[in-house]
Amino acid sequence: MAQRTQLLPLWLTTAHRKGFVVLGPEKLYFAFVPKKQKTGDSMASTPRPVESLQDPALDQLCDRLAQLASHLDSEPRWPGEQMQLCVQYGVFRWFLPKEYGGLGWGEPELLQAYYRLGAACQTTAFILTQLTGAARRIASSAQEELKRRLLPPLAQGEQLATLGISHLTTSRRHWKQPPLLAQEVSDGFVLQGESPWVTGACASQYIVLGAETEDRRQLLVVLPTDLPGVEIKPPVPLVALSASCTGAVACHRVHLPRKWLLAGPEPGLMRKGGAGATGGLQTSVMALSLARAALEYLSQQAQRRPELDPPTQHLQAELDHLYEQLLQLAQGNPVTSKEHLRSQCNSLVLRATQAALAAAKGTGFVQGHPAGRWATQALFYLVWSCPQGVMEANLCQLAGVESELGA
Ligand SMILES: Cc1cc2nc3c(=O)[nH]c(=O)nc-3n(C[C@H](O)[C@H](O)[C@H](O)COP(=O)(O)OP(=O)(O)OC[C@H]3O[C@@H](n4cnc5c(N)ncnc54)[C@H](O)[C@@H]3O)c2cc1C
Image (cartoon, rainbow, N blue to C red; front, side, top):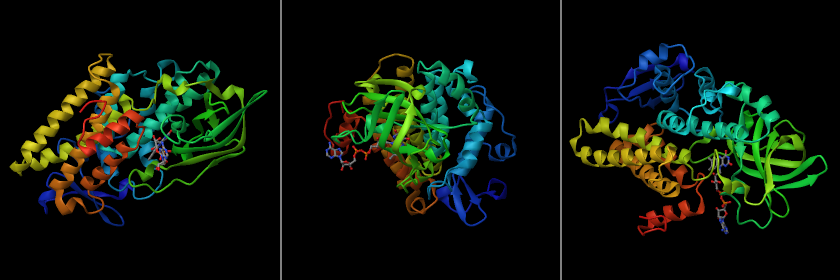
């Protein structure tokens, strides 16, 4: 698809003055490419692994993802081209230790990388959070044999692993029975039930999966997706991010040898946190990255429409403040709580993306315009990985009352 598209500057409408129209093979669609990005250069460059946050290859990757973002998401079709770019630019290496072929980036660097990628393409960046969350959970386990075998191909992107843990944290917690039951047998476990939300299972060789014993001790396993009894259900069409190919994974009496056990069984295993924990900094930075995309658009509009300037500057100052707090937390400085930050990021992303849509007016409401896409994608933060406290704070914000996490 990329080779067959043409990028033309759009001079015709004020709404897209600083963007580009992409002429695709079948239809006309919008791609918003901020002015500072060099569209022509990045289209021509050969992909090569990104070595640091300052590496120009990271700019190229973000340009390419931004250009492809406009025609993603209308249906649950896996974004193979975007994933291939991530492999070519060495993205999977950032998240894993050097001894397994990774670059061993620390939390602050990874958050900054997500801030860039998420502004370019929410769907790709979200998928990466799940894939790399799985890989990082394997890396932080004590299972040396599994780490030696699984991590090098995951670091190269030759194989993929994804996460199915929400039924132990934020989904189906009001159920009387465990949604995914693990029965202990002499050489391992028999898994029965369903993990309701798994992103990209259709493209993954492994799922880092949560399960519970009858007495609700929690365990984390690596589930090879080709084991007998594993059923990857068709991805569900979503309000946004459909291309993440998210759906349920069922286990029909899957016999899993003990060698695949990552952690547990023990009570409250998931409360220990670690990579991919709910309400963590990664979800917050993803929300900020989307607010960033919307504000880049707003500031470009404001250059010709001075009435947009005060609200844009106000929102930008809020974004800068929250991003600074996020990086402080990542460096271990307790400037606020993670949950409070998350609820503030949720609030900002909703307001910033709706501000972009308001500025784009009816044109922004046309399918394919980025402002409409960003506004619907922002709704995801109301439901993704929200622990109870964050969910309650969201509701209080919407109701205009103070929450326990603070205003
Ligand atoms: C696009 C998308 C991708 C995702 N990807 C992943 C992934 O890759 N891996 C992963 O682990 N997770 C993933 N998640 C899961 C996500 O992080 C949350 O866990 C999920 O959104 C929680 O929603 P739920 O409907 O399952 O919650 P539930 O709490 O199960 O709510 C379901 C319904 O139950 C009812 N209900 C809720 N609480 C109660 C109660 N206390 N009493 C009575 N009724 C109640 C409500 O009517 C609600 O609609 C994804 C979610 C989405 C939307």
